[in-house]
Image: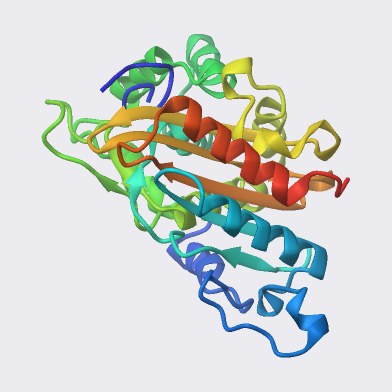
Length: 293
């Protein structure tokens, strides 16, 4: 595992709320969706997705692009205004979280401080800002070891509340278990997490996180960031070299009032590295959003 500022190397509502997102009435579509029959519908690749025809064409372009790229890429795109959701074939595939899990850590810490179950110091708050801004691993380590509790489960016990219902900590890598740097989840989990942040956290906490994600350091200006400045993107990225190769993940929001959310988990499977994965994630966001704003 190679440390590069992300992932394992860089590295409220209840579960019912998470289930609501998971079982939205909008139909999910995949690359294997049946072809429409009318000439008009042929230009609208995923009519059951709930997205307009322009978006559907963009999603078809994403699928064609991914067919040329190394590894596997899971995607969940959500329109928070209309409820439309599109997932590709790998949206429920478990992948190393890398540092995307830091977003869930920060939610846990800020909500815990608000509830009075922990008391964050000024130093703790500086570490939280460092995790959001530059994905600082040492900051994440300090806060994890400081607030994981006697059984080390304080964070993981709450992550399910934020929609990370498939998250699984991985054994056999560190003596301190569970550890933020060795966990796996799915793109669907990250979709539910970012939507929990946007819809379920207190306004001041939400606004703080949104502001931080919109002003990340250069090392996180890729992935969802590829939507372009007019789209006002914000994201938390995660990157690391794991068993099986590099993973390059990104989750965030796009558009006025954070209308759209996008979660991408890219497992290179030994077929490429950091540069290839970063380029793929960024191009996905560009294909979906460029010119829409």
